[in-house]
Length: 99
Ligand code: H2B
Image (cartoon, rainbow, N blue to C red; front, top):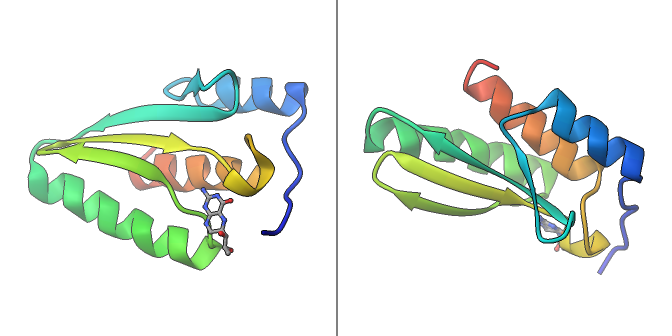
């Protein structure tokens, strides 16, 4: 397992203020957001795009899908908390939904 540097408190606060749809979870070790789409096709299309990005970043979301809803949790297992990899995935996912 490669060890990855955790975000500082300031960097974590900045992530949450720059991306207000994302909420702190797991005692600050993760962030979570629920994406609501119009239907399953849109939700799955989003997940497919995210999956390709995740694979190319070698950084994978924890997520749960029911029909048009996708609940995403991001954390870095190799850091036991949040890292720049999570920031990059937050930005990529928000960009996909036009934010
Ligand atoms: N995804 C996440 N979310 N956290 C990690 O620490 C992580 C990952 N590590 N994807 C990667 C894969 C690692 O296990 C491989 C071996 O590079």
